[in-house]
Amino acid sequence: MKQKRHMIIEQHNSIRNSKKEEIQSHYEFEKDDLECQKEQAEFDRQMEREDREFERLERELDRQERANDYLEQSKATSYSTNYYKPEPPSVLLLLQPYITF
Image (cartoon, rainbow, N blue to C red; front, side, top):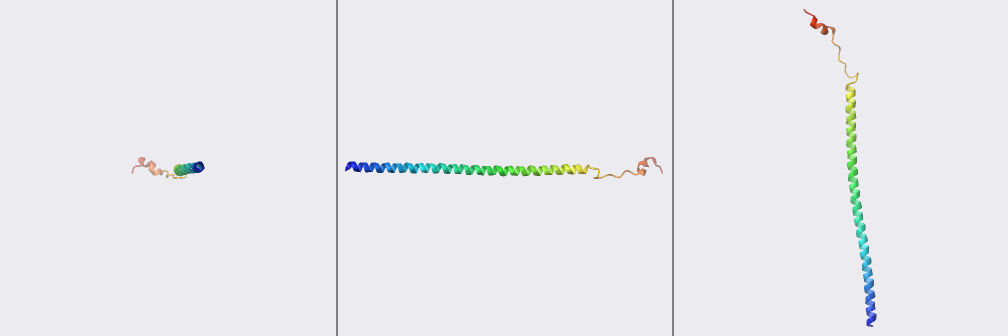
């Protein structure tokens, strides 16, 4: 009778220990999975920040290029022959040093 009782206790402890190991294994798996998800979420956030910064720099570069193009265009326009031609001096102004009254 004692031996049977001892055997039942041994089986019970064995089952309990295997269940405990199974739960511990499942817990470790879930813990690793959550850690992986956390790392992936942080990586995604970092990539989104870098994407936004890159897009901001691209927009700034585009604005600077447009401003430079505008400046070059306005310089070219100001030096074009259609921009401004002063009137040639009149003949009287040219001869003024030689005219005496």
